[in-house]
Length: 203
Image (tube, rainbow, N blue to C red; front, side, top):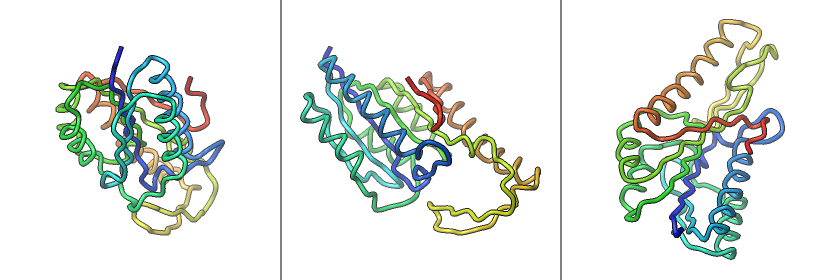
């Protein structure tokens, strides 16, 4: 079939979060490995982009098991230089480097905004699939009392009173706003979306 598949993976600090079976980053790596092996089984080319608020790594699409093993090695061992997320930046980068129509899996927790315009631009030229990986705690904050938290993207420590229903609702509302923006942006452009929880099977 000779298709081009690009795995575009968010490696910002918010992906290094998980309260149950694994971190969001670990789930992203696992899904990426499955997709990469699926690509070579179908004789397709597969490439990789790891991004934060800048593109940290770009591996052009190629065929072959050796190439896929290199991609998986990078996914497992790569240490990003930056902490924050900029989805707009990676979409602009994709638009500049991809000349052939590709299948793009953009994987992130999508804790970012103002990227709808570039989602529209990319989706007109390529098949774009947004894979949103979230931890269950982000979607339903539990009452664990007055607890310390760390915002890794902004390098800030703070305390949160999770015994307060209002506080729990505010945190969940914040995550819901990000997810709803992601959903609206992709669906408006005709792109597909997949939502995955870290503690649920994704197959």
